[in-house]
Length: 375
Image 1 (cartoon, rainbow, N blue to C red):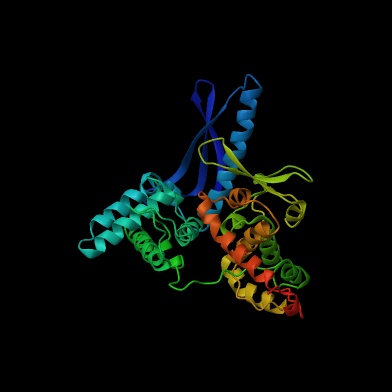
Image 2 (image 1 turned 45 degrees about the vertical axis):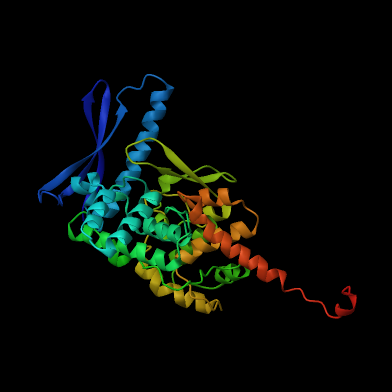
């Protein structure tokens, strides 16, 4: 099995470059040559002169170790996209534009608007490594929020969202075929259903049923409950590293590092969520967690709990968002907790909560009010 080790190399001006040593070497997806060294393009000070440089060293080493852990998992899975200059530097928006220009006739306008809506969500430039299932799910949610960016600012219909997302999937498949993506995302991600589908989520009493019900896999149960308590997606939970967990009782948080910088994003989590992680260690938090395992175990656990709903792991994220809004958390805060780029993506949960409130308002019924009604 390949091992990824963090190493250092002096580069002058009192600085030390950090790089990853991969042994045995792996094949570069562009050139076919064997690669052993992967430079991270970050550095530390050889002899820090003040507190600021010491802090820089500390945070940069933590960042590098987080990257090393992720690369170790990727190498073990035979995924070497991080070594590809085409994938690291390639612009998916530009590739989408090229696919649009190939279309002629009536269909060309549909492709043009599909590209415009994608750019309104992702921006004018998006590198291939930033594409994944999570990003795709959020783009689908964005389209389903019915944004109106056209000439007249009219909200788009569900069928239009279906069409635009289909163009996005087709472009992903071409990107994979051309070698710009290491995973065929166009095949993996779900299409938007032409019909309005109900977003299943759990109420608090149903969550308690899951807590009280035995599950065949302890790691699946803990990961599911952790998602309910934090709103994190499966991909985020599966790659969560102990080095990203910070704080102490009453003030725990997850610190997400951004590659090539020392900047960080923070997600506060409850003590209950932290306790689900077990004893602090090193490396991956949810050891042994696999999506195939989740697909196999989840339905049985839900059925044993007496819950008659069709739930996927992503429904636990829906549960977090819906309950937060039901319990009074403002939409801006919920949007930030979910990591949404656009608050319009979060609005879909507001619609769910509004419907629940309308339904609840009709549940209290009194008899014998007819004689009290004036007129």
